[in-house]
Every structure is written in C-alpha cells, then in structure tokens.
Length: 281
Ligand SMILES: [Zn+2]
Image 1: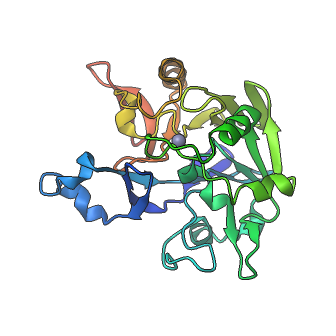
Image 2: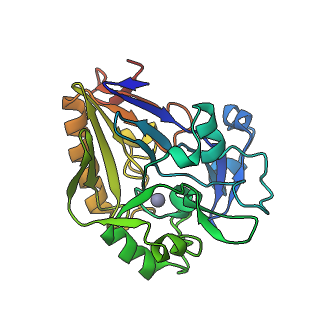
C-alpha cells in the first residue's frame, strides 16, 4: 500500500501451527475454515500468521521483523518455503537492497530470519548491507532468558545464530523511549511483552501507520487480551496497548499485524458498540 511518500508491504511467510513446546510447523490454511472438525487446533496448538513488513521510504529500504526465515539455510528441510528473501523478490528487491532491519524483539518467530547458515557453514547476516536496530533492554533481557525453559509457547529466545550479528557489530542499540530513525519513521518502546519491545510508527503526508509486533499481534487482540501467559509484564502490556489504540484511533492510523490469520492490516476505527474494528480504507 501507499502511505504518503512510503510504500509499505507485508512479506507473508504464510500460516503456521505453534505447539506448546515452542515448535512450529507449516500449516494448510484450509484448516482454518473447519475449526469444529479440527479439534486439535486450539487445544494443543494455535494457528498464526508470520508477516514481516517492508517499508520503502525515499531514503531507504527497511525490513521490520524478518520472520522465521525457513529455507534460507543451506541444509534446511524447508527449501520450498517462502521466506523474507523469496518475498522480497516479489517486489524486485534482493537482500542487498535492504538498508535497515528493525527488530521489535528477539523472540525466535520474529528474529530467526535475521541470519542464515551459508554453504560454507558460516552464520551470515541475511541482509549484508543492513544495520540491525533493537532496544538495548531487549538485548539484555534476551541474554538473560536465552535457553531458559519457558512454558510460554512462542516466547523463546534462540540466540545461537543471532550472536553473529553482535560479534560483527551489526547491531545498533536504541536506548531511548522514542527514537526518530529518519523523517517519518519512529521507534517507540512498548515494554510489557518483553522489557525492550519496540513498535514502529510510520508517518508521511499526514498518513499514519503502526507496526505492532507482539503488543497487538492480531485483529482479535484489539478487543481481547488473551496474552496474560505470553507477556513478561501483563499490566504494563495492557496499559501500553490501551494508550496506543487511543492515539491510533485519533490519528485514523493504519495498523499492520504480524500474526493475523484473517485481516492482516487496515485502518483502525470503532463500531456502534464502541469496539475496535479494522476497515479496508
Ligand atoms: Zn514475542
């Protein structure tokens, strides 16, 4: 979609089933149409989408949360899976074209596509010319949590392949609550899901959009809060979400969801029952 002078596109990796032990499998989206006949969904696992975001501004190409990255590694069993690289190709871009990667946080499902293992068995940044931005509080928290057993599916850190970025000085750490990256691109710290979680505000020609990461992962989460088990600090997360939605409604902002199954983006509004809804335009 066009947002003022920016082009913003979701780089969907498709639908996945997330199990309690934190493992993912690719899922046939047809199963979403038959939840009654597929009782395993919801009881033992949950379905989610993975939707990295591409933002092209007049100054730079940005990828926000590069996804699972399945199929990038030379020995991957997921050779035919769409990943951030195959999805950039749709827009005529190669990983070398990306100037900046923004990581909302380092949970595996958001950050694994940051690197891949090359034919020569070296862990390599997926985007060779990019700086990788993340909040310093996220890095410190991830280091403390890495390899800890968690019973929160989807809340695990697997940093083995990520350390390469730190060793190669590819990370740029954000320290503040609000950081303007360039005209119209601002990072906002939204602690709660993790202490250093970031959301991204885009603003161009009086149009506003937000990439919400795991603060509000799907449209369903606009009016519900089933994240208590997922968020490091549920009270803070709920407060952040309330404040953000109030502001985004005032701005008639466009929202981009990372994990949606049905509606993945749209303009925030409210219906006659004062419930948040997402409109096409
Ligand atoms: Zn997460």
